[in-house]
Length: 359
Image 1 (cartoon, rainbow, N blue to C red):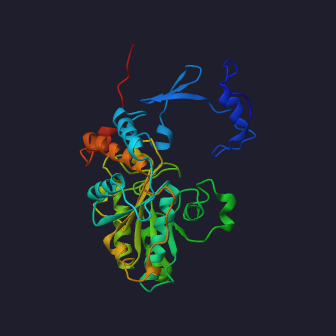
Image 2: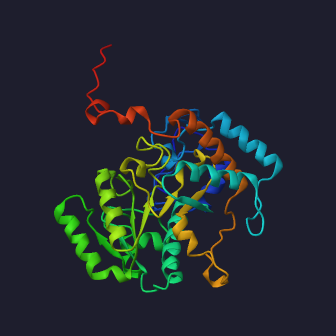
Image 3: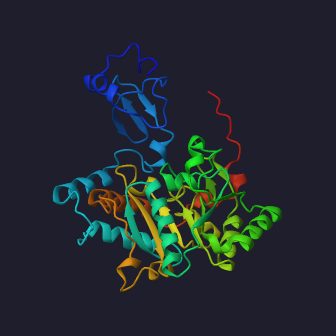
């Protein structure tokens, strides 16, 4: 790595001993400036081992939606740890996972009422894709195996998620040649782009399993916003051409766009939705892929081959689900499990120029 975290700081032993053995994310390890050693977090602040404090404006990749170390989440997780940190969901069930599934489906619009838990956003997207493809296989349409995704979109770093992300707008251009090919198109934001998408479906609908989009905001692809009418067009198009609509709300979910979920602002519901990041309030890894009754019913069968054969080891982890339930308690108070009044103002009011503060 290039340089030390601070030439004037004495690095702790764990830092000096361990840094040579860790492979850090999204980094060229040879030229990467040495990472800053963290001692603790509190609220919006990260405290370094030398006592300096940083204000974390990115909330650890948009996870710590209540700030770090919120006492309610911490207490609930501690209580859960004392009774049961984890148990597999294979043949077993526990209160935190079932309670969370019930609460999430109660908050989501439409008939999104079956929750599949995993540990990360990328995996949640993989599960959504697998779910969609097998839905069509179970329905007798095995040729429907491609996805329509959008330029500037980003859906994760696992192989399937990379394949529906824009390689030019993301970090995976080097691997584009080995990924499965899907249909990457412009968002239907006007008549011309909508007509292009209509032609694509007219020609290829028999091969398309689903449409995948980050609703309202394409996050890692450049914080690109689009209108709720785009989502309404996609819902109508999916219905006309008999395909599934998948919303990747890993970044936008849990109040980030003003409503609890971005899809609420379009007053529509997808067939499958993915959630993660702020789900546990930035405490533990957890993700969810949630399907409608229509999708789930295609798997409900006496035939074992029609089951969704997927099961991450830590799916529905009790500690993570407890943290998520505690986070929902807090969101219920701050958002009222609905829309944030601040973001219902006209944008001219929300973004009005700040008055200059004279000291």
